[in-house]
Each structure stands twice: as structure tokens, then as C-alpha cells.
Length: 238
Image (cartoon, rainbow, N blue to C red):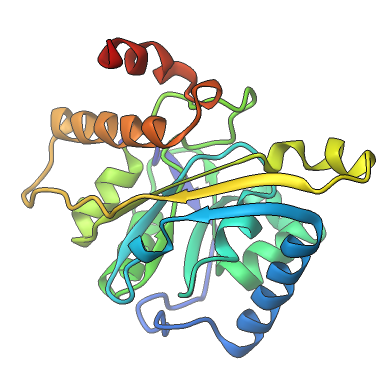
């Protein structure tokens, strides 16, 4: 399956038994600290928080343009969320700890299709949890949307969960703004949950729903962030 050609690292966490209704006390304290930092050093605008489901599973599907995506988006999520993260980040100081502690990360690396990674993800959703997975599969080097991969739709279908589209932009300018002693203008937009039709999806179904998801993200973003979907978006607007 495209976008899920990954091998899970050994992990003893039982994702089927975690309490996903709220952040743990330590996670909540850390989240509050992140929010304080965000408010001190950025000018952030958050739209659509009312669209975040208060209970039940969903797949969080954000665009991915910068290392600050996770703290910026997760700071405004009221519920504990598990993320897929490349194994290279586990060994990097600060970011590895952030992903493990705050994101309860399932570390994966590119390789052969891995049923364990899929099972862990489905465990999260079937336990009523939130799973964070960028539909592009990796960080965009240009800031614009890349071609969507089918992993988000596949897992949402397997886990019987809706997809919550989220975009964030402006955080990629953080360092340049801070060097000039300016606050970073950031916008986070949270769309309405996307409820997929039930049934067993085959490749054409996965492709079609992934395409629809990516166009939803494109509509939520300014023109300069639409990437490979810019021309199609412009064509639909004509």
C-alpha cells in the first residue's frame, strides 16, 4: 500500500489500552508550556477548533512543511494523539523526546510493507484514539503540497474513523522572523471531519478518496502553499 511501505520499530506500548480521552498530567503540563511559548513568540490564529471531535477515533491529517508543525498543531488538540514518525527522529535530542513523550510516537522507517505498523495504528483507532499522519508521507521541501499518499485513507477505512483535515502555515518562517526579533505570524485551520463511506476499499477507492482529501487541504491553504494541486484548484475555480 502506497504511503505505508514502512517497518515499525520494536515497541512495547500497548496502544489498545491507552486512555485517549485526555492528555496525561505530564503531557498536559508540557502542552500548556508549549502554548505559553507559542503565545509569547508568535502571532497565531486558530480557526475551526469547534470541528475537533470531543470523543471517538479520528485520523488527524495535516500538511507537513516544518519541524514546528507538531508543537503548533498539537498545542491546540484537547486529546491525546499518537503520531507516526521516522525512526531517524528518535535519536535526535529534543525532537526524539518530544515525539516519544508528547506524541506517543510509533517510530517507523522506510522499507518493506509492515503489518505490525498497520496493526498498531488500527489499535489506536479501535481504542477510540487519535492518530496523526501526514497524507503526503514526508515533509515538503518547497512548502507546497506534495502528491498525497493513500495511508491516511487506508487507516481511516480500516479503523472505522473519520479524517480531520488540518493545515498550518507560517511556522516555516520562524527562524527568519526571530532573527529580526519579530513574532512569527502563524495560521492553523481545522476543517470539518470527513466521514468515508463504509466498505472494503481497493486501490481505485483509496486513490479517489486521497485525491479528495488533498483537494480539501488545498482549499484550506493560501495559493502559494497548494503545491502540486495549485493548477487543478485554479481550474476548478474557473
